[in-house]
Image (cartoon, rainbow, N blue to C red; front, side, top):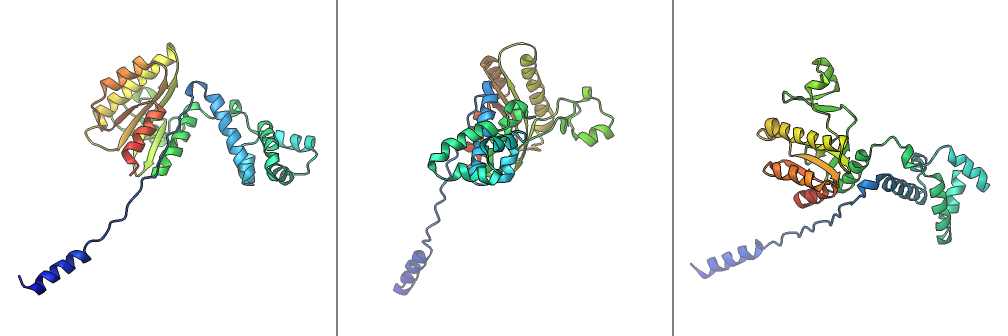
Length: 267
């Protein structure tokens, strides 16, 4: 090889030595809820959302998280003319932080009066985590999508059109996963033994058997999540052990599910 050829090779190598950009993963912290005392968790969540809405002067959200009957009573009691004046009083300076907290405590809608299932609240908090990875977790209304015992998945209209009966189906899915990951969710909260609590594990078993029979081989979805928050560790661990070899089935708590999704999809 001539000197000129050697110089040419060296020059090409230098020019091709491009430094690839470094991609830094964002740190995502899973949200941990006290599922045995969710009403308190939901109330604290309402307080925070209303406080943030007042801080940001967001009247739409203030009305959403306020008791609508209490607002005019509070304005009258405080001698204020309107919501704008109340917001100003709360945000005027740091000394008014206590005022804002008292206002929020008085105004915030009560968790006990919200028509929200505990499971729906849990899914909404999971979505706060997964949405950072372009994965949406949505709560589904009752009977939106049902798996049939013959292996189909039907919506409300199809259920009627096919003249299906409830006995032809499993119970409807509680949630749906969309975005860069597709899937379905069975979500339940159960503490202590008896009646309903025992039936949760039976339902979960039939769901996973259905997935194993009709879905596992066809890979129609990325994941099926069986999310059970419970203190019945023995029953939950037995369910995990029985179906541990199913690659697209997750079984565990809301916190474990978030950890699983972060480990697998935060890239």
